[in-house]
Length: 116
Ligand SMILES: [Fe+2]
Picture (cartoon, rainbow, N blue to C red):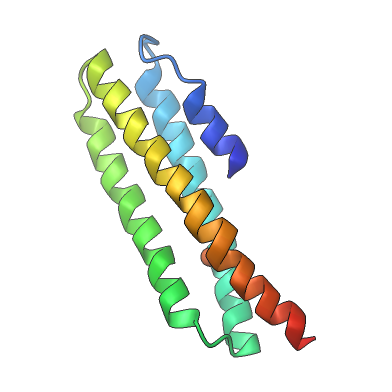
């Protein structure tokens, strides 16, 4: 995830291939979700994690937000549109990093570790 966020930071909105580069990064966000969410949710089930419903709700929020971002990326027409879009992406990913990965994922990992 850290590398994906870095990928958004390094984009140049004047690049003629900006849309393709954004779709590539959005695809990486999908791959991240497909792998990590399924793995975590299997752990929730097998370990009886009590906060699984709320945690899975946040995973769905991530997936829904990525779908909206795909749609909005298609709407970008100008350099300014892409700048605004990339700013939204960065805000979303930084919030995800600090709230979900640094808090929610740490909570479930601690629960499983303490069960062993
Ligand atoms: Fe998670």
